[in-house]
Length: 204
Image (cartoon, rainbow, N blue to C red; front, side, top):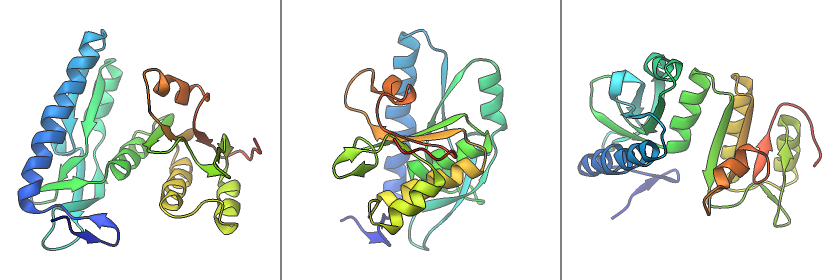
């Protein structure tokens, strides 16, 4: 039965084996093959490969982890050779034991270590909402105001705060949005969908 701590689902040692097999195996390789079919050279990796993502367990009886160290050299080598890394968020601790790290946290850690030009968070909603309408653009100042006025609430608060932190660590922009159909990722990157978070103040 699922167990939670401070809203985070805990991964048992037995479930860690399943997470490795599904996330770093079945799903990861499926994505690599799909990219190959589109003419894109891709390599599937997990946080354990090359010690890219090292973390620590959030509790003694759990293999749910938080990131403590990123070694992005392997990713830079691949990117420099125009090879796309396909990354799963299973990682390991300092002793080499498996960890399951939240995908948003892993994406944040890796993108800021590179740093990436754009970080995209795929959510189950179309973006940051105000009165059920997507806010197209936000800045750090806008985020603070929206949280204070309770326009942004609940689980979206840590997501937008992480986005603001990413900007301070060198990311050019952060996009939060949903993926429902083919072409949505392109639309998100092109600013046609979702919420784009940048350092500049905008009021769109």
